[in-house]
Length: 159
Image (cartoon, rainbow, N blue to C red; front, side, top):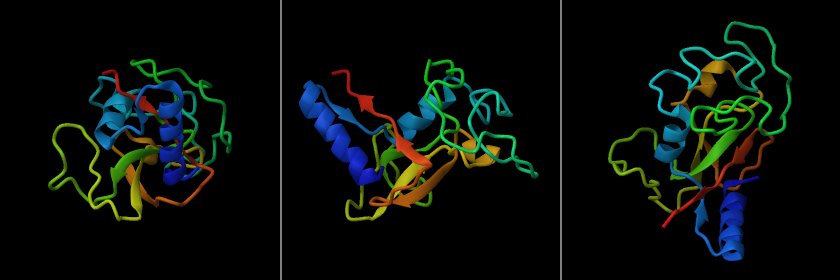
């Protein structure tokens, strides 16, 4: 699923339901991933294959299952959210910027320049190393690119 596909899905879901669905911003995603913690992962300063779906270890070895697994195969974080670490990298609403200089400070998505082909993905997928699963990890992807380790979750405005 590409970023464009995910945006199309949130628009369709919004029209179908009468509620406003969207991709979360980077800030919202990280807040949800951390689930009230200030450690590297919501599980603490380390993560294991009992906590998340990832394939490789940082210093060699492939202990993971090596494929996408059903959502909810691992315990939820303290906010009750599943698979914030591992399984798939997640598309968020923001345009890619290399740093946070001039980023919004209120948690909304940074959508300028709108013409940019690059979008942010957060977290790590089933084929990742633990360091890529960190709550703060971020990367970029072309808005039209599709990969088997990239997915998304939706946010719903409560107003």
